[in-house]
Length: 109
Length: 114
Image (cartoon, rainbow over all chains, first blue to last red; front, side, top):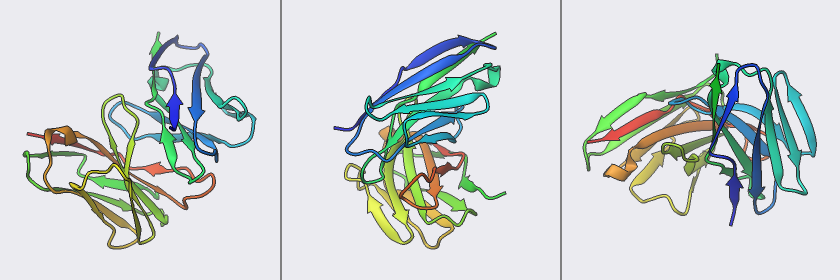
């Protein structure tokens, strides 16, 4: 079966760095997305990786290892507004998105 | 600004009473999706349209139907809502199905069943 695993909840301190991990098992692979979702709101697109390596976008970076079926989202200089759920989603061979349940990130002052 | 708009933001209906949720987009995207999301769970794809081609997920209950009368609008009809259908319903669009096209979401409609 197809599956995405990510931690349910993480806590970090304002100004610090946090890494949210995601492992995936899919039938084929056409890339991996990260979305941010604030409570009661819709997901918003953060990043897309299809090749191995690190993609940096300001305070947020996303890493992919296809051989390991592994990705992480790295958030630097954490701000209170970064408190949200972060969803990992992989595109399978049929270009269907397989979603994780999300990691709830709690930022403490 | 180009966007995906869902109405209403909050919908309350009675058990068994049909309800329709609407979604419109100004992005001129080919693909429109309907997801159901319950608290702390992954979004669950109900169906999607690629242009006028309707694609139903195998495990989507018959109680859920959809219409896409034109490129801009898509509707979700729940014929006889049960208590288990209380959830956030998300509409999303993408330019195409293949490749690295991210999905753009509306703000969602939170459905409550009395």
